[in-house]
Image (spheres, one colour):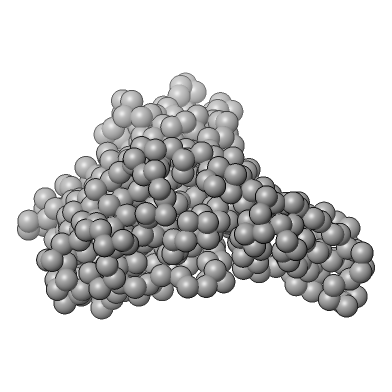
Length: 88
Length: 385
C-alpha cells in the first residue's frame, strides 16, 4: 500500500469496506469526512468511495496512535452501516 | 415582529415535522414534534406558543453501578448501541412510515461530552443524507429553554438552568439568551451526583432523585448541618461545598468520633445521619440558586422564573423557588416534570424547528462538527423579538 499524501508518517493502514451500492459508499464518505482529526501532525485519514466500496487510508506517527485512531473510526463506520441497514 | 412562516413545510403540508436527537450526556433521547402552520405566526412574537404537539418522546439512560460515574467512552458506546433502535421506535410511535416526510433533523451540537455527542451526530448525518432532510445543530441549553417556554407558556421568564453539566441564570435580551450568573467550578448536578457516589447510593433512576428521597427522610430539619455558602456576586461555587460534605460523609462512615459536628464529644453518640447531610446539602445549594435567581429577577424586572434542566425536577427546589416568588409581587414559578426537565429529544426538536422556521439550517455537512464548549449566549435567537 502506497502512502496517499506523500507525507512522512510511517505507520499506515488501508481498509476496504464493501457496501451494497455506490450511493451508500458515497453516503459513508460524506458522513465521515467532516470530523476534524485532533492531532493532524500525528494522524491522517482519507476517505474515498470506489464504486460500492468505502476505502479508508490511515497514516500515523506510531502504532499506538494508529490503533486508537482506527478503532474510533471503525466505531463510526459501524454506526453508519447500522443506520443504512435499518432505514434503507 | 417575527415571521415564523417564511419557510413553508415540505410537500405543501399545513404542519411541520421535526426529529430531535439528543445525546450530550448519559441520556439518549429521540423526539418527534409537530407544529401547525398558523397565520398568527407570520407576524408576531409567539415562539413560546407554537401549539407544539409531541408525537413521540423516547429516552434511554446509561446507568452506572453505585459509586461510579459515567465515562465518555462507555457513554458513547451506549448511545451507539441504542441510537438506531430509538429512532425506529420514535418513528413508529409517531406513526411516520416515510421519514423523508420530516422537515428537519435536529441534533445537539454542544455543549456536552465529546464522544457521546459525536456518536449521535454520525447517525444524524447518515439519516440526513439518506432521507434528504436538512440538519439543524442545536445548542443544548437553548433546547431546554425553548422546551420550557413552550410547555409552560412563560413568555419572558428568567431561566434557571440546572443540570449535571450546567448551572446558569439566564435572561433574554436582544436576540440573545444572556448569562447573568453561573457556576465558577462544578455544576449543581455534578455536585449532587458526586455526593451520591460518595454515599454509594444507586444511580437509578438518577442520583439526584435518590438524594432528594433521602432528604425527605431527614428527621432533624430544624437543625441544619452547617456547610459553606458560596455566592460570589451573581456567580456560585460548589466544589468547596462538595469537598466539605464529602469529608463529613467519610467521617460518618468511618465512625471518626473525633469529629465533634457528627459525634457527641462526651458520649460518642452519633448526632447526624446521612439523611441529615442530604437535606442540609440540598437546602444549602438551593438557597444559593434562589438568591442569584431573585437578584436576576430584580435586574430585569421580571416576575416569572422558569426552571429547566435535570435538577429542575427536584420538588424541593421548586418549592423554595415558589416561596421566594410568593414574597415578590405576582411572582410565578414555571417548571416541568421529568419527561421534559431531564434531557430529551423533544427539546432539541423544538428549538431546532424554531431555527428551521427562521431559515437557520445546515447546508454543508462540514458545519455539523460537534463541540464540547458552546455557550448559551453564542446563539443568535432569531425567533424572538
